[in-house]
Length: 401
Image (cartoon, rainbow, N blue to C red; front, top):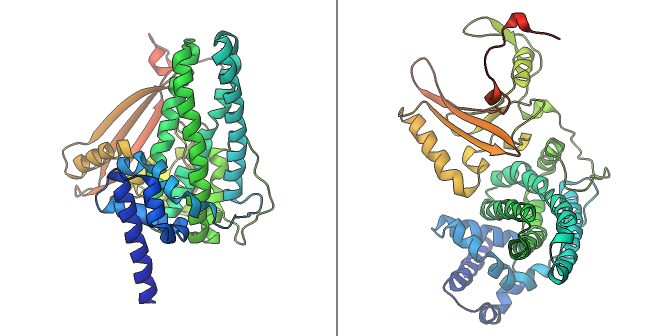
C-alpha cells in the first residue's frame, strides 16, 4: 500500500513540475511530447490533488486560474480518454450536464446573432440579443448550486483546489455579464462584440473543466448520502433552463432534520422567557431579514429560511468554513472582519450595495458570552429600498387594512 501511495505522489510531483514549467513559459506541445507516457494516464482526481498541493505550496490561486486553459490543453488528450460517465436523470451530475447542454444552445444562438451584428450593426439585434443574454444569465443558478451544494461536499474530502479556481471563473462570468448587459443598454457595439466573445468562451471552457475534471472527481469521492444532501438543497436555489429528471433516487431519503433543524420539542429557557424550537424557527423565518450565524470556529451553523431571500443559501453550507462561502477576492476582507471581532477591536461591520434596483444593507455583529468570550458572528441582510423612501410619520392609529 505504501508503495502505491508513493507512486501516486511521484506522479503528482511530476505533474506539478509540468505545471511549474508551463508557468515559467515552456511551450505546451513540448511538454506534451516530453511527458507523453505520464499524461496518458492522468486522472481527474490527480489533477484536483495536484492543484491543491500547488496552492498549498504557495502558487496563488490567481496564477493557477490564469494558466488554467493551458493546463487543460496539455492534459486534454488524457481527459478525453476518460470513461464517459452515465448517470440517472435526477442525479445532481446528470442535471448539471443537462444544464450545460441547454446553456450551450444559448451560446450557439448568441454566436449566430453576433455574426449578423457584425454584418448589419447592433440596432436591429439589441433586443433579441438582450433576450438571449438574459437566458444565458440562468447559468448563475448552475454556479450557485456548485458553490453552495457541491463544493462544500468536496471540501469535506479535502478537494479544494479546483473549487477555488472555478469560483474565480464564475465571478468572471458574472462580471462580464454585467458589462455586456450595460453595453446592450447603451447600444455600445464595440464593447458588446469584444466582451461577448470572452463571455461565451469562459462559459464554454467551464463545460469542459466541469465534465472532465470536477464531475469525475466528485463522482469518485462523494458517498451516496452526500449526493442525497447535494440533491436535497438544489431546489432552494433553482435550475438553469432545465427540469431535473426523477429516475435517480438515493437509498436514504433526507429530511430537514438531517441538517440540524429540530422539531417542536420542549420549551427552551432564554434570558427572558422561553420558547419551543418550533417557535424560534417561526420567528426567525418571518423576520424581514436574512440571518446567518457563524460560530467561534468559523463554521456556518445556521441560516434563516425566509420567504424572499436576498442572497441564496442552501443546506450544503451548514458546517462549512465561512471563508469557503466567499469568492477568493473577498476572503481577505472576511478574515480581517473576523480577526477584528475575535481580538475585540470591533463589534460590528456595515456594508450596503445596489443589486437589481434594490438597496441592500448588510451588517455583521460579533457575539460574545457573559464572560466576554468570542462566540461567533451573526450576519443580517435586509432589503431597505422602501425604508429609504420613508418621510414624515405613520403612527399606529393611522393604520388601515
